[in-house]
Length: 129
Image (cartoon, rainbow, N blue to C red; front, side, top):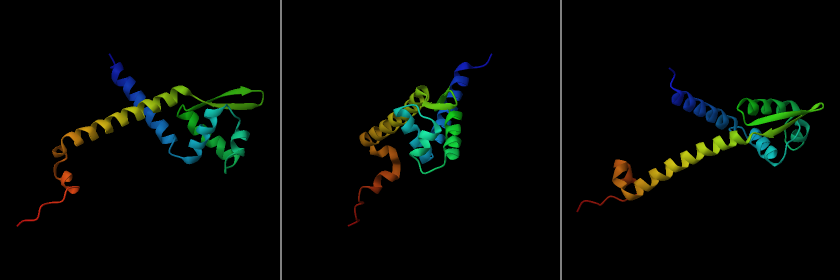
């Protein structure tokens, strides 16, 4: 019997990784920010960016492949929109990362000895007399 817990978590990590990778490109971030305001066509999106419609289409393909955007066909146009579930997954990932970093910082603030020799970097050593 397959372990559904492991399968589900691997899927979540893989999807989150794809979403994070897709956000690594400034044009794709700009596209998502623009689409968060309202659904738009490739032509509308390209008008606000310093790239061609073809480049916008390629970026939208990457975003769609990561599950960040979807589209609806209206006549001859494809209207792209943000997929809220993908952004919710990204937010959950960043929240977990933030919580871990904050807990680590709090632990270090409570007990600086837990960082070993690196804690002494911020504190001057006493000179021998």
